[in-house]
Length: 310
Image: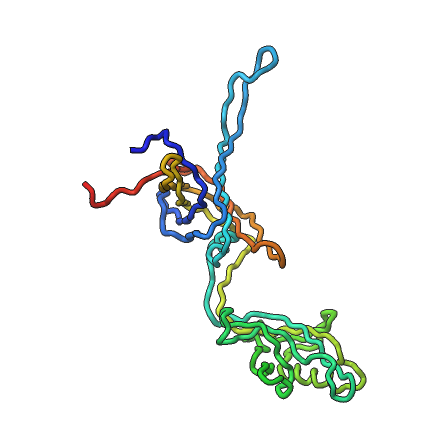
C-alpha cells in the first residue's frame, strides 16, 4: 500500500467535465466535456489580519480569512456549447432555414478601348457548394454577366439570394450602396445588378466605369446561434477534472482528480482574432463558491481496483 508520504509530480493537463447542479447540490447531467485543454490551473488565495505589539511592533498572531479558489482553463479548440457557456446562458439555437446577411464590394468594369475590359467583372462571395469541405460553402468569384463567365468559372445566376425570405413589415431585400454608404436603391435584384454592370461597361460618360459599390445579399444556412444578451450571464456548475500524477520512485502514473462542487463561470472573456501568431485559445475562468456542505474542493489520488476481486 502506498504511503501518504510518497511523492509525486504533476505535469499533464486535466480533462474537465462540467455538470449541472441538482437542487440538493449533487452533480446532474454533464453539459460539457473538454479534452483539448492547453492549461488548467487551480489557485487558492486568502487574506490575513495580524495582531502586532511590543518593541519593534512584530507580528504576534495571524488570522487567515477570505479564502478564494479560482480555476482557469484554456482550451485549444471551441465548440458552440463551450462558447455558449463562456459567454451566456449555455443555450445554443440551431436549425435550418436561416438567412445569413453578407456584403460584397463590386468594382464596375471599365473599357480601356472599345470592348477590352480593363477591370475584372466579378465579385467575391460566399456560396453553397455541395463538393466543398468547408461545411458545404466556399468563397469564390462570381461573374456578373452569365455569358461572360470564363470556362469552368461560376456565373452569378442562381448563386445568391436577393431576398431574406421575411414577410410583411420585417421584409428587407438586398440594397445597393454607394462607396460612401448612401443607399442607391432597395429591392435590389440580380437583373438590376447585371444591368448596372452592363451600364458600367458601355457608358461613355464614365458614370459607372471603375466605380465601387457595396451590396447586401443573403445565403440560406443551417446555423448554430449563440445569443449573448444584456440580461443573461454564465452559470454555476459542478466541475470535475481528471489527470495523472507520477511517482518519483517508480516513474509510474497514478490517477489524480479534482472535484469542485460549485463553481461560477466568470462573465469576462476575450476572443482574439488575428492574422499572425498562434491560433486563438479560449479561456474559461471560474470562481469556486462554498456549497452547503462547506467543502469547496476535493483532491483525489487513486488506483483502480480489480472489480472481480473479493
